[in-house]
Image (tube, rainbow, N blue to C red):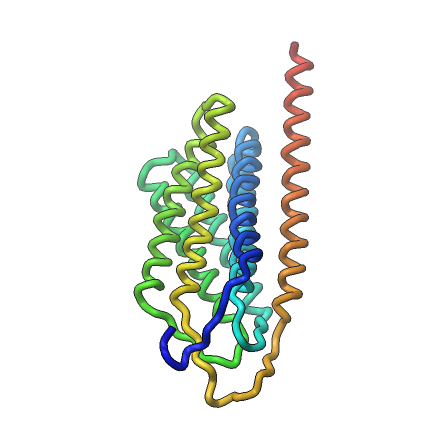
Length: 255
């Protein structure tokens, strides 16, 4: 840290939780989209982008709260909500662009750029929602690396997504590729986030020496995000289980 900059430490539990959310959401979103694509490609794209976009947003804020600063911290709700809307919007756009035609290299790259841009906008807008008695600045090299990670890893993840969605794998191979895709997207999100966090520096404000901030308590955000994430996971799992049981019943009926 530079002289005069705030020092901070990391909450390991929140870091692990954020990565688990990113990977789990990626896996559930891909499995949901894979099943929906058998009947409706549009709904498959919307579900993939919607669930994945929410998971990125949830991971981001748990990851932000993992950074423990030596001062009171709160969040501006309008910007916080807008960052979530952007994440979902861009991931839906990336998914629709990916699956509205043949998954060519150019289309895969375009989807990765759209998704990576959305991840970056969500992250840095979310950082702007941070209410703290300090002035933030960004170091250019980690900032640039965070953007490259977001776009590059998202492109690789969408390539793997396309293989899961369009290739007739055996069950074991499909599951392996799907897990690999979820891990790639999960670590892409986490890698971009924590590289972006490494880019930021906080200098105590000289115009506001008090320690009071206005906004939403981050601990309340943790409870809200974890609660909503569990609801998303359970709802997605119930749909997947119901679809699986329905497919088995249909197969038995044709025997």
